[in-house]
Image 1 (cartoon, rainbow, N blue to C red):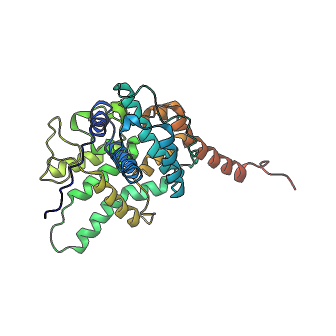
Image 2: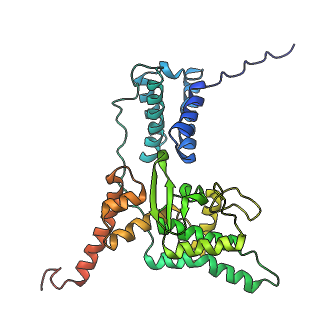
Image 3: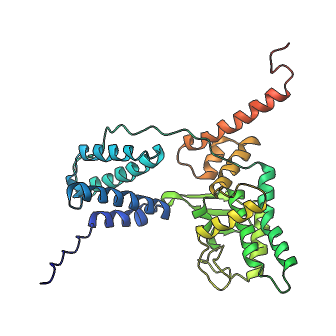
Length: 323
């Protein structure tokens, strides 16, 4: 006798609609969409194990999420990991509320762990210079070792990418998504489409502009509108992927004698810290970074104040108690 066939699972239409909402209407980054998808899938798997069925999202109650919170606590997840999951759930339920699927938010008054205040890591100016020089130094080494021609384009592209990220304080998704019509070559400015489809104009330094011109000259990259500034390969007009940038960064960090675990976001941190160190206005840095809230930028002032205090303690004749 044949085994009974299990019914196919019912598609989770609310999750699918939420995914589309994030990607199209809110203009969320691919990372946000991915992380929120994972968070909802994790909750769904937990609920399936607990209740024996897929979650009926509009019917869930506050106590259901309190139980999920206790489960995450038993896993000894970090505060940031727990908050990410509940940020996804909270955003999802706000979407359900707007869609009329629920009349009130079930995720409320939950005692989530408070955020750990961690200062962003950054590279010194000397370390940044060593890193930005690394792609062309690696190209020179490859050429010296090779008996034949070496493909210089990946090295020129990576040099231009790193220069651009640091020069303009860009997120990795922003630099990978940059299109030719968004680069004003004459004015050396970039039109950046950031989180939530927010637009901002940022200046591009001369070294970064020169690196882009050197790269474009090598690939004969057509400047037709709509094409990426940084392509995945010479015979492709697809944009370079974040994973490619991350792999290249690890190589160049190691070549520069720096920690290869540092992420592209550390270049953005370095950009902000160096500007403030040299006297830039906090609100100006906020605009350049594309931060909605000033509090997101203020974290860098702790770094610069700590460094200024060290300079003061080392240099001021009456900084310490006189003996």
